[in-house]
Image (tube, rainbow, N blue to C red; front, side, top):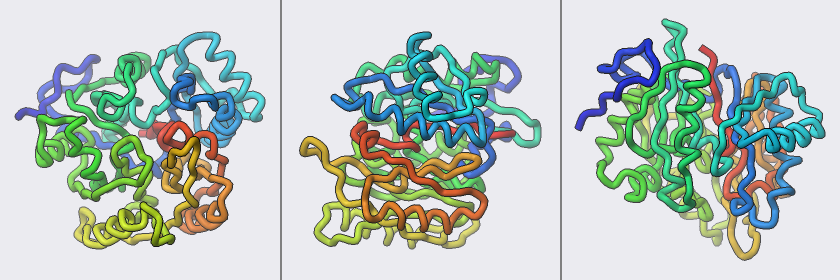
Length: 360
């Protein structure tokens, strides 16, 4: 099976070589950003009865990120832009560092439907990979508007874009920036994503289109995660050779065994240089339950911006502990918490809502 890209939609790159062969790669999140991309939340069905409650916390997130980089926001129309501007202004954000794009979306989860920016540092070039998007195995149609967001952004910037032709979500992959990609079998090997491909074929796509060399697999995600086990609720790189991984301390909790098994497997994995990664354990909050549904509340869904690491908090006794542990992992950024108790009703938090654009 060929994984050669189709014709690039803009000129300037070969149409017979993969992004990796052309010297492009997806940087780690802790590398310097030009901007953060968001899609303004508007889908009532994602936060039934609660969507208005999320905006002050979402706007606080924008304010903090905008202190260190531009924030680019996809909106459907002028009315949505005006509403967003009002909330962002009320949060006290620097509006000169916030830019809006009329790119209509179905939903807000820009980590999964947004652009995967690759860079070629030698040639000082960027490109976008537009993976297929099917709303986590077709769970939440329609998703046609979300699926084309990366190409709209590439056209806006007039940079090359390539479509590998398979489904992939940004929340399902973690990068150390040195050639290693970390993911989960529960998500990427789920038949609701790419049933025509086996593990080796999926690995080949990730090597070719993310520009990595080394792929590590973990097992299952946490309870309540409707993405079938995204890595960004589970285990995250904080530097080239260190991950934080969430652990449940209550033995009777349904996440306890899952996370114990995850830790055991993590300890067996080796990075691209053959070394074992440093593993820092991060606690879980107590179960967050709303309308009898357990929500995927996890401190691992933090976002690494240029100035801050923004951690979702849940009005829980472990909030401060999680922030302190993460602060010990980042000596170049301040780690801050923003209340995510209402946001998590949408089954995701700050990392799920954002996608970084790296500097080249």
